[in-house]
Length: 103
Image 1: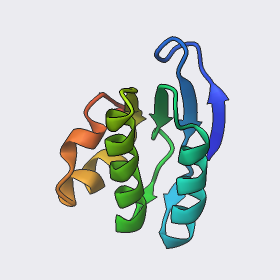
Image 2 (image 1 turned 90 degrees about the vertical axis):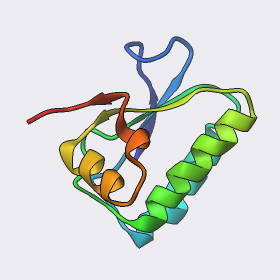
Image 3 (image 1 turned 120 degrees about the vertical axis):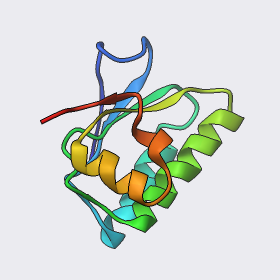
Image 4 (image 1 turned 45 degrees about the vertical axis):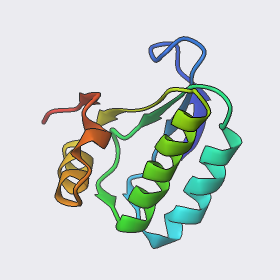
């Protein structure tokens, strides 16, 4: 997961690129990176995600709720098909609806 600025996203938004495997061991680092970006708009690039577990999904859902309470925008962009399918199977299809990457 790499925080960076990407001018193609929301102006002024930071960009967080998710790792390809978001398993249990990725949950704590993901939380730390999200907290470091708190207070400004954030685009979360899920284009490279091949696996996501429930723990990381929970971290992303909590972040979305936190950003909303803070009055900031958090968007998951460029969701890979694997990311979109898995979050839909876990009951959260709206997390990956912004811009999905198609094969």
